[in-house]
Structures are given as structure tokens and as C-alpha cells.
Length: 84
Image 1 (tube, rainbow, N blue to C red):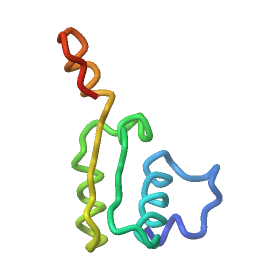
Image 2 (image 1 turned 90 degrees about the vertical axis):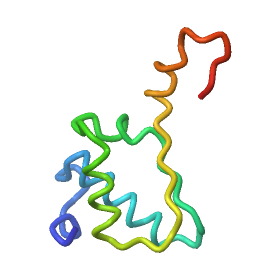
Image 3 (image 1 turned 45 degrees about the horizontal axis):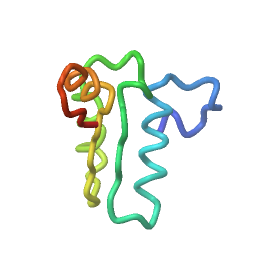
């Protein structure tokens, strides 16, 4: 996290930008952090584990909800009742 503090936005990878947004959310007054479609934010991210590692490293004291609507949309696409 310290390495991205001195970078300009255009110098950051997608994952570093995601981490910067996460830190901003942590510093907000909100009691809960909602991460929507993390896999569209970081197209190079293969697993959710990278995000979870950052969350555990930062020892966040807020509730965090991760909602990946892309995966859910594909999962329920052929169902009669569409759940997103």
C-alpha cells in the first residue's frame, strides 16, 4: 500500500487502483463497505482471494459485503426468476 501512495493514477495497476478505492471507503464515515462487481474493476483478477488478502491485511473493522453481479447474472440467466 505504501508503494501506491507516491504514484500518479496512470502509473497504478488495476488492482492498485482497487486498493486505493478500498482505503478511501475505509476512511469514510460509512459503517459498511459494499464492493460491487470486483471482477469488473480488476479484469486481471482471477480469484477473490487477492481482495480478501488485502482486507485481512488492513484489519478493517467495518462490515464488508462483496457482491459480484456479473457471476450471479450468468448463473441465473436461464432461470425463470432472474435474481441479481
